[in-house]
Image (tube, one colour):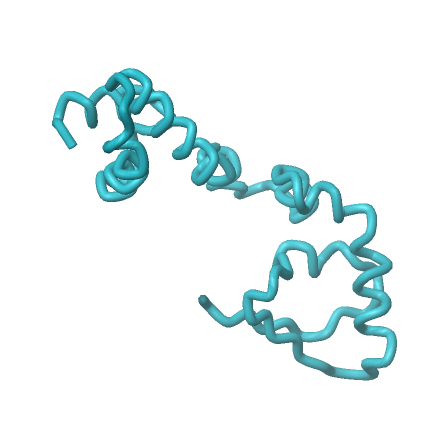
Length: 129
């Protein structure tokens, strides 16, 4: 990728902090297309928005005084599930008595959502991915 094209892509503030490798990878999807450089830049930015938009807000990356519900409302998929978490966790934990452990194996369960249910909460151990 030409340096001037790279600079055009990242001159927008929303892309200025992305790793060079990610910008180059996104651009590589459009590099061989028969279209103008401006179109390739636009397509690259669109792809980067799709990939990184959930993480782009400084607010969501530093939620110091924000509760789990605030964080869950920031993404479409969890915002849609939020009204149902109470019922979901009630069903999951209804037969668990006393102390229990839950291991999040990255199966699409959002760790922030554990605090949204009102039943007795088991110990929750989250494995890094």
